[in-house]
Amino acid sequence: MKNDDLLCPSAPLTQESFLFGILDEKAEVHYTEKPIRITEGLAKIFNELDNPEKHFRFSMKCSDSSCAQWENEKCSIASALKTSSINQATKLTACAIRRACRWFSQEGERACKLCKYIVTDIST
Image 1 (cartoon, rainbow, N blue to C red):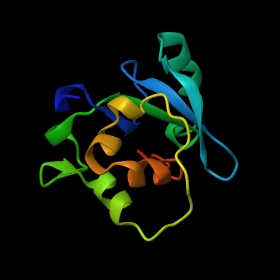
Image 2: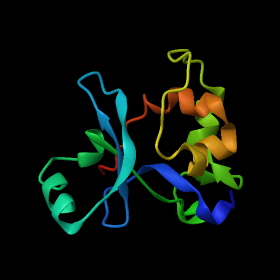
Image 3: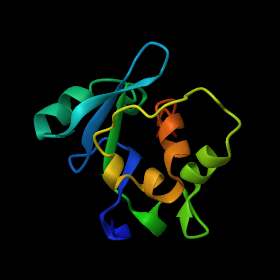
Image 4: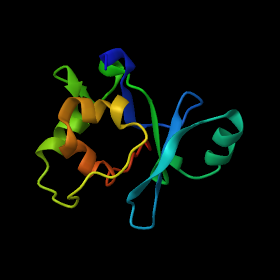
């Protein structure tokens, strides 16, 4: 997959994003079968929540060097997942965006296994 086509699996809610995961009460992500395009109506509903990214996982086109997480020509979150000492997950779970995911493309299965424990926090 070309870098231009990769998706960020920790994107903010926008009308350009797709829902692909729902967080449970333990803040673990449960993935949707298919990515769900965020419509104006869905965005309005999700924005009624305080920090919808803490309840759902959204993806969108990776913005590469325009992203605050971009360091040394790659995503620093994916790099951190690869080197993390967390050993929670032992197998890959089904994921609707894996083949186009920046983290998987960059760091492989290790990033995928820990992805479900990532909560996006865009609050300032």
